[in-house]
Length: 262
View 1 (tube, one colour):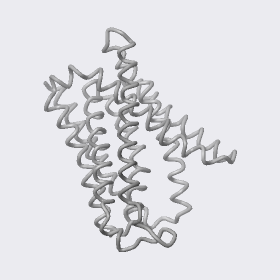
View 2 (cartoon, one colour):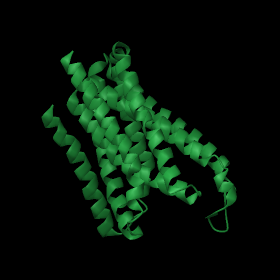
View 3 (cartoon, one colour):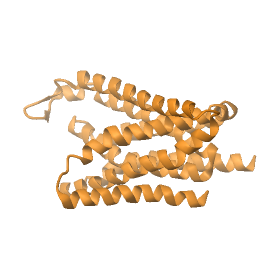
């Protein structure tokens, strides 16, 4: 009982921190564009290493230990990849069709930008993503405190550049700073709902824990490999590529170091 209460406290505290990251956009307004780009450049590289590291070092081994056959765990990991591919495909399709025509004259926001459903779409996309992040974090803490911490760190490193990007998109679409922050923070709070679902349905969650862990691993592999790595390949200069590689290794090393706390 005490262990469960501790895991619940850690999980809720973790998603509160993740939710507060949605407010980071306001901090970046005073940063010079070049400095911001360099920060994002390193953060995305760190996120790649952390996501791959958490999936391969922590989540997949845990998932394998929960199934009688390793092939079953592998199928659930692939299911996580396909699930996030489908979600992203659906959201991108609606985002493209709903924002078409909102910008004219080389990207200058028009009055139509205030009436288009961009805010609702970002709330829906981020909300779904954050809800799943909350479920993943909650499920990770059911495994152990250390796996929960590793997963939370991986999520945080991925969330920082994503939240900055979402904030910039909303401002470009014509929304006020306050409303853009409100949309980002509101959707981020759904991560708390995800954790509460896991711990409210504790017995059912534990029954499906190996499957949820494998799905989480698949989602991390998809996000890192499909969304983030292509962004890193846009940089071709040797010095910056070396910085990327170093940051990726650092992200992996961070996940590996957490193994010694288990």
